Length: 229
View 1 (spheres, helix red, strand yellow):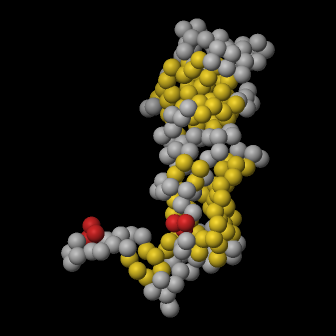
View 2 (view 1 turned 30 degrees about the vertical axis):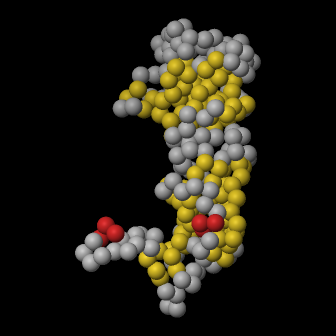
View 3 (view 1 turned 135 degrees about the vertical axis):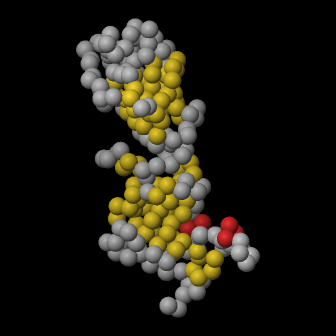
């Protein structure tokens, strides 16, 4: 093999903690030329497209994208392009972005080390609040009339505690709140089980008509509602 590998750590003898696991090749096999992130509204997913050289066509295991140390889902690879579906990240913006091919970190990855999610996606699904089992909501039925979302007294009360499942443009650690636009008040008494792109909102006491507009607040920025319910 003609390439020479250089380790970025500077270990001393017997000091294994000083060894870095990130390798950069002096003559890299893969190189990043450009990288962009777009929302695909046909599947409601964010897609990162990387243009470069040295990729192995049709081999989804030959190149990997990590954001916030989470490996993303590789969906397409050609000789000059790779696409990844974002499946996990901490917030809507990250500068902890690394691209690996079979030989290690791709050259030029650090010139495109920022991924940002445009705040364009928001979906609300009414659910019953059901007692949790080991921190997870049990399966729920859904009830809705033509005027108002309502919940069986077996699962919710007029004092609040109803539940909305929120899907949208946010990460695991973003601040999330659901707003009732006619009154411009936050309706989540508590946001639970937040993961990348999904959370549960336990509501304050408030009657919400099916025609009422809702908005999602992510770190102080509002997203209009795509209410599929």
